[in-house]
Length: 256
Length: 358
Image (cartoon, rainbow over all chains, first blue to last red; front, side, top):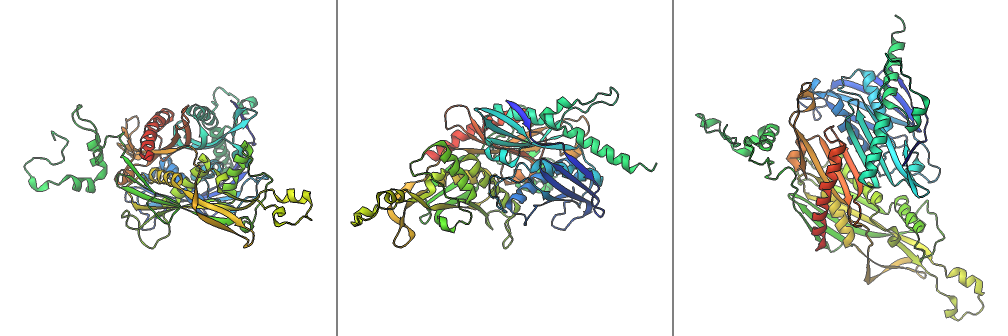
């Protein structure tokens, strides 16, 4: 199975919103998402937990109000992010993450409906990355960082091809679509798949996704450079997350 | 304590509580205690008496609702869900973005099947709705909007309905073939126009409203809901519909029901991961034990954060097809455990197939 990617390198900016505790803007594979993180703040009485912080994730779509699909995205993100945030450190408080989708790729082949009920797998990595960047920007203590990617298996000329960061057209013709997220300890944090596939195919997808999410960071001492031809299997998200933070810290400490 | 029994026979009988009281007061240590027996010859059991890898038996009844075109009642333990499928006719003139296609009724090729699948999605021909009614479990309060759980389960059912392609969209089309005008004795009509008119036209679609009501809720809603949807769809018989050109509407004829074509038998299988200690409480390098509890009930779901659901279909006899994997909320289940869990789901598939058989 060949692996291909259709998108360009991801872009991110930290601290874009002046009022929030932390914020991030991330764009990749046609999606642009802005996130704000506030916390720990006082929790509402019904959300208050005596031993841990309540993590509240709100997903706002690019147009219209959120429906059942956004509720599902929220519940997936909430359960994953509360695993990496050290929620036990902040009992009775709330960490609120608001994700506003600003732009999503157009599908020229279908007349898109505003409200869609089905799961939206291809947006999940963008939401995930933005949320993690915003959490880092807000300085919320986390156990590990995490990165996510989407992989689609697309039939082509009788064979199957896996596409990292699939376009809406790829998702439409794909046999199966997968989203996987890994923590920085190389643990599988989230795995969502739909379509028609075998365990063997899922294994291949796992390998591809792990390569995108968990490529070993090149060491500073050895001055190993990431060669361009290594990028054929998609972006190196862990390195991207790290370099974004390094750039932010460097620019914040520029006055020294 | 010498035995697993939480009632100590010590000198202070006033501190003795019954098992249910302990389970209520501190559920996590209680479940941990029953899962880790003192002597190695004892099997770990859960509060409900099941072994960790034991699921509740499933019972399926169909055709219990008289007003619906298809219905089912599914029970797994104390989770009871009732599903009704009702077909409504949707004339193509009522679809705003309807795009007619040129295929005839007899076109049975691959492209038509793919187009039918797309139609299901584009025109919203499958409408699942899930109600977690007040009274099915204490956490559902009256007079509030649908809970996140209900919305999430509904989205997952909708997505799996389309993703697994269980409903053949071609069976939901209503065709009309104009009658030849020769029968009216009108000889002036030209032959070419006649042939043009005899082409079958697509006049309406059946929309299937799939309503699920949880009568009683004791954990694992998705597995029960999906089994109910599948059983109800397999039970669905749609009446014969035809276009009446005089009245310009679709009419149904009684007594000539056709069974809906349902492809495959995808079966959902869920489990939850019970951890000895939560992530924040584990020291560096410390080993944290975990148990994978198949088919968790409500009290277990409250104690577990990590859940996994696998939908498998072994009906074509060959290699097991996986329709969906959903794993979230933790890092215990990795690649090997998911692979192994597909095998567990295959076992569940055989149980559900047997329950659907009668």
